[in-house]
Image (cartoon, rainbow, N blue to C red; front, side, top):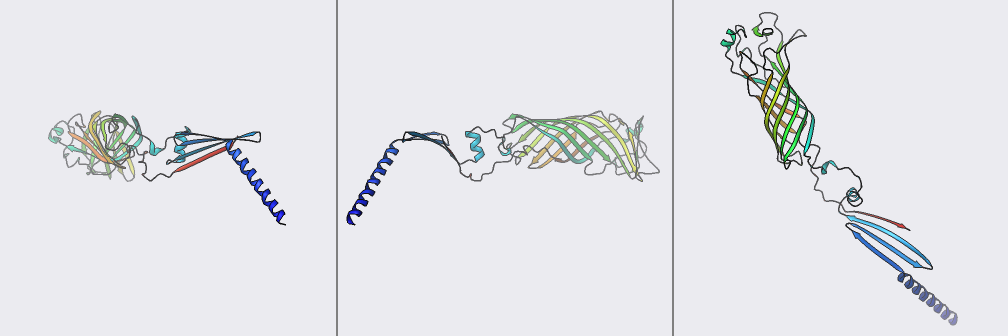
Length: 323
């Protein structure tokens, strides 16, 4: 029994020694190559033994960036730029901008002289041609506004093209506009409920535009410049008992309007103003129109948001294959 036990122990010892020797021989035949490039590590392992060779390749990428950042940086993956990473362009466009505000004018007319010229009738004065302060009496539709970078995207040249629609609603309802020749007089009967004079312009503004933070929409935006408008439509419009009457004419309005224009905005809020340089009439009356209001749309870089400062999560990707 003791002899059998001793024989078993010796056999186990010999087997263990042989196994260790074989393992040592196998380890001696293992070749490991390591190549590092940025955050990418490539490990190539070659094992030789028993007349055959095995090759294993393992790729490991460790980074504090997201997986898409890793693929884009290391593997040149054709990902599109994300909105929050976009940088301001040298030329940027804003399409279909809407303005809603008030249309009024300053009146410095000499009505006695205008009456002698036959342009206005008896009883017409500043009180009769006083307009209502009515919201949305000025509606501007800018087809496109473009910004051209001048200095570090903070100072830009801003210009565009669009339509200025001005509606002058009169307090007094018995105002009558006649054409050929133009004459403004008072009605004595059949008074309408609403009376207005509309003047629409095709306008091109040009301004110097300053943005304190061009990377986001959180900066203060200031613009100042001038605009040139062409009168393409004018009409006198009344409404009475549900019926609308319209008389189209230029009514001796100046065909061109030159104005000082400006904007001030922060975040999604923009205020605009337009102040005519000259009289809106080409004879008799002396009125300089102006408009102020709110701008909807067209805030600078609204599609670019500031990248969040949340701590990035570490990303790790490994890939291996037996060749």
